[in-house]
Length: 281
Image (cartoon, rainbow, N blue to C red):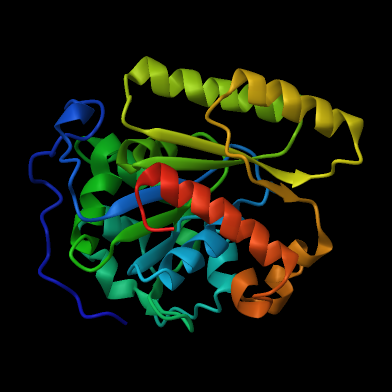
């Protein structure tokens, strides 16, 4: 485990989080960037993206932490994380325990892991019991800022109070998008929600995932979506068995097959994300 810094109060006044206080008040020069990898739907390559992007961020020299917020724990499993004690969502939200107490080292220099826990399925319940519940995640992350340049969030699917916490805390939201009409509809809803909230500083970074260019529907939807959503990243992640095997190998693709075509695709994706967020590619 990582040495725990001095606790930070979760009840202190909010520093410019979205909602109760204007997002414009958030210091834009804060040391740590928060990048959420999320999608309302599951099974779209979300965890694969989170693991590979966080690995590449760390490989570039930035102190990086991946927080697995999905109670299913796919990212924790892939990075071979073995928590020494349960990571209680209730104690984290209440401030009785601090995030750094549960951080694990991975086998990869510069990349640490906050493992998932089954109690995360009740995150919404514990958040709803606190003051300013939509700002809680941002406050919890303060104890990490002195140690890490980048915090990646591997988010659970669905729409919830935790989802709103994530959007309020993040600097950028990376959205894996399967080329289908329902996925495009979800992206439009997310874009409109962010616009309605006035979160002009929140970067929306969608990319196409699980792409099969042999399917005419995929080709058509990709073309029309790129016309409607200019923020789409150029990199497309194909529907390859090599990528699916990552969870069998339990290692990021650039680590297990550094010269493979799948690793090259995620390097390209990371270069775009890093460029858009101002991080080192």
